[in-house]
Image (cartoon, rainbow, N blue to C red; front, side, top):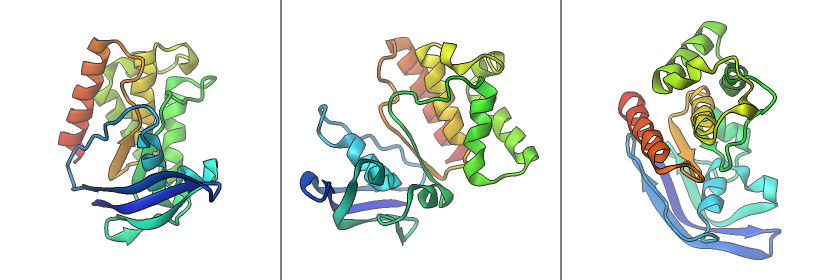
Length: 192
C-alpha cells in the first residue's frame, strides 16, 4: 500500500534532515516508527503526506509510492484525495467549534453527501462512544484524551485508506494511552 524508498529530505534546500529512510506498509498492517526526539519521525510523516511544503521542505532523493502511484511531489490536498491522511501531533483542533462541528470539518476533503457524512459521524461515535456524549461541547474544553479521540475521529471522517498518527500518545495518562491504542487496533480490524 505504501512504499518509502531511500528518501532524503532537505529544508530550505540546504538543511539535510533525513537520509536513506525506507519503509513498507501493507494493507491492514499497523506500523510504528520509533526514535528519539529529533530523529525525523514527524519529518518522515510530513514527507509522505505532502506537508513538507508548509515547512519549506522537500523530498530531494528517493521516492514515495501510495497504491503504486508516486506521491512525493503531490500537494497535501491531492494526497488526502487519494486516501492517505495524517493526524498531526499536538491534537490540533478547531477549538472554538463543537466536537460534532470538528467531525463535519473532517468530512470536507472527501466531498461526501450529508447522508454519508452522518454515517461517518456515527462510525466515529461507534469507535469513541464518549464523543457522542460530548458532541455539543466546545472542543477546546475537552481533556487531552478526549481531544486525541476527536482528532483521530476527524481523520476518519475523510474516509482514509491509510491513516498516519503522529505521536498519538503524547501527554496522555497510561490508561488513556491503552484505550487509544485499543481503539486504533479496533479501527484497523474493522476498516482495514
